Image (tube, rainbow, N blue to C red; front, top):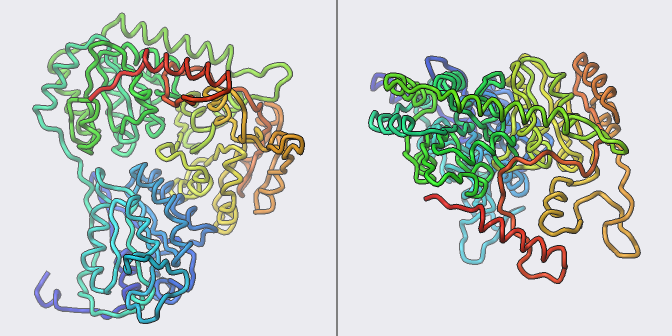
Length: 631
């Protein structure tokens, strides 16, 4: 670029500059380019309608505007879109000041914990201050520059407040750097004071030229690979834990080749569900607190754990109880050094695909071969687990409603290659993690880094916008549905077809299960009327017509109670062109089989309730027997 070109300027408001800049940003990986922020979502108020709203209307020809029903929802939609695009594209999300801004904080936390890029543009109070205290302003007694937007700081990977329009020249490039960095990505918040949005500045013209952000594939250091090969060669019972990093790196083929070449079974975290094709002989399905019994059993005996692209949270480590082999060692492949060093592991700080390819080449050169006896054991464990599902789980029981477990198997069989099912909180994510078969190209999208109730429906719109082929399904409990159903209106407005499958079990039954296991009594987790005799919520179950509710927001709805009715509704929903909602009555208190992985949730240490006292004794015995901390 010549010096003359660098001296050219264009006069724009700060908000107009944001809009023009976003339209010129591209990501690139493996030679493929795409718009990184192809659209903006937002709800206008007095804090942004005259600034950012005006800018989008005048300058947003290539930045389509979408109108959600809730500010939190739009962030979830951006997260769903980012996940479906392997973090190579996302949406911007705008809000007015005050509650519109703080509504986005839960969405920001969800994105950051799941390492999903989203760009948040909340309006902020007047930077000039001469207006005095303004509508919706928080007046902090000892800090005059605090606003409610400071709440975004702990849940953002980068935060900046633009108090002068020229500050965009450094803030926006840094925002893009963080959003496109595989190790640093998450929610990025650029706080936009209401008055400064309308202030003008002579921006350099080159600032709005096309810019390509190349997503790095960091290669592993040869010394790490050499040491990893030695560890694998010495191992007798290796096992892989595959996380979301495998999917985001597009390393599924590399993982399958690696696992099958050396005969290493693979368990998947919730974020990593589908990291290994279900058809593979090395696939154990979900692993962890909500995983398969075969994965939990084999992990307890593993002498080498190779973790690929996972944060190793307590659901994967069984609160540090899952790895019981006395000489267990760890290899962690991760783009984040923070995660790679966990468990006292050999850290391979690298892109998952590149690391697995290098590991494969070096281990093959070292002539490492599968152990036939171990392969046979893996096969038997898989077969026993499947037989248990077919015999004891994927069946209904006399006198009970259809179980959610049986229903999931029916849904699984009804889906086709390219279809995606989404879940996030309550019983559905755990049941899908344990029971969903990803063979045949059936995708499973689980958000459980934050286990955010209300994520499912808006995220499905983001997946639908990213996924032009196949159907998009949402498996959601009735409790979660009640928290955030309104994006059905956005689906109708934008003609985005998704199919909701609402499991009606009259409450937060998965938490009731935990409650019964740790307190021994049921309290406050079911949708019941207040009993005047006890003044507690333990009267009759409430009657709620979820089908009519969904119909009121534009969906075609079914209410089903039997497996045959569910199959028929799924067939009819596939043929529909508009959003659908299948409400299925399921058994309230029937849960999935044991995963063989413990979770540390303590019973009350001091109580007068006899059953709780007994559960505390059981908890302490389990903790002493199982928990083993690795550093």
